[in-house]
Length: 412
Image (cartoon, rainbow, N blue to C red; front, side, top):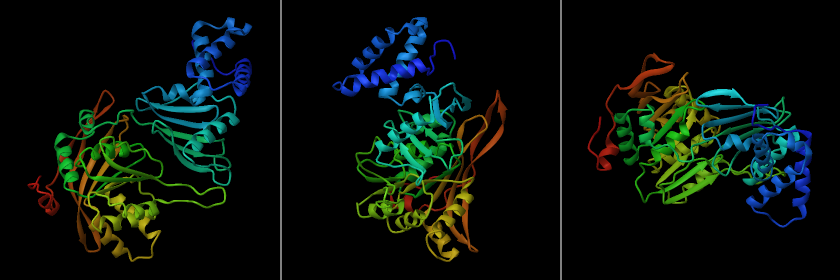
């Protein structure tokens, strides 16, 4: 135990139950009243006199968070430098901080305590997780994304992964200053968004796809009606005045009531959207998204997991084919006509996230989808452990019909 920290002990657990029993019959108490009650009860204990002032403060905070916050996780959630929390089991918790993974000394007192917390989290967003349905996506009130896997699927015990997002989403100017892309590339994307090109953002896990999608959405002209569709709502389109946010729903205990991404995409078409933003495409809903893009709903934005723009197209092809029995050529034609530009992001070995490729989809040739590179990241080495390189312009925009229709002069 580090100096100034106070982990769970039998005494602290007993005190928590004493306070809980006091609260069970009391009227609702404010945060200030609860904190004062905890301090009063703690200072009455003989064993508390052996604690340092810092340890007493830590114990009060831990007790308070067990009632009002997310118990052992609350201090981690209050640290803005922590970008990911990975619970492998109740007594093994890792975090990502400043791009590095590190094991913490944070522990839950038992597996049951962690399970109680999981149920509280998923219950807040009307979701359910149990042995018969052991995998679920949820979110915290601050927008952080939560992924839960329970035993028997998770062999070591309940597993929770929390992806955190900045309280103030990063804008494109901040991404440029961080070296994620160049001002020249950003200016092109700004024009493409305004001109209603369909953009797809690809990248690996943790590459910054959601952050980049948020930043791109800043350039959607004011007054447009935006529909967002997500498995677990995490997009923060704070600039949008005419916004509808839709979220999927799991089946209930009777196996009924499930609402899928595909159903939400179809429902959104009847809401008079100017833009449809699909947070992440993972399965057969890819077909509905492509059909929406091909039937007048231009300017759509979406993301997906892939290792390159070419790989993203292959994955989308597989997703569509998992839901319909179409010839491959037809699927590729749909992809080629629906998606205008793919922006690929990568996470580098130094923890930085950058745009590594911007490609234009220009059509079909010999049964294959053609990609026309516009920008590509060229690495030149390392300086003090940081990756050095630049996003280099490699071509001009080939298809400019949408630009002219939107009143823009040709760019690039």
